[in-house]
Image (cartoon, rainbow over all chains, first blue to last red):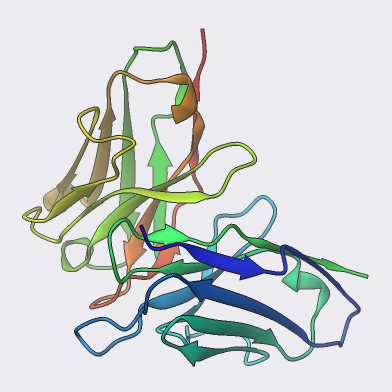
Length: 112
Length: 119
């Protein structure tokens, strides 16, 4: 199975400060279609997960532009330029290049 | 309103069965792959099954293969998960999720339904 490993597992960030989460996979996430199938999700308390970023860096419509994704191959990063209170929750990366599709173990983000 | 609404969860004894339903609205259901994703208490997210638009491509995770069956009724905008031979470790919140067209990513999730397997 493709293992995706996130670091750190938890983050405490002051409002207005940046935050960064790393996601590393055991195999390249570049699909034969030419797409890199790495996406990011935020799971807020009491809500279902919501997609933030797909194909590494494509922000879904309605997602604030303070969220950005980058990377290639096996190394990826989610950045929040200025953390806001509503950004608390658990962030997951997800690979869809090879079955079984797998999520990272999650990074808990809290506000200082 | 674009949404997915799951139902059918509950308390069941080990070895029992449940059928989950996910009703879609606000989009052309028949155009999209759909997945079932679960999260055990205190655990991570696991894609347990997906089904293509016309039901010709179906996948099951090893953890549920042979016990769970996914299906859909495009005329009724509905996705189903028949769960048999339930085990304690199937206890989880089950989400249905809509795929982004042409991608392996999920842009719409239901609110989730809790399945509790316990004697």
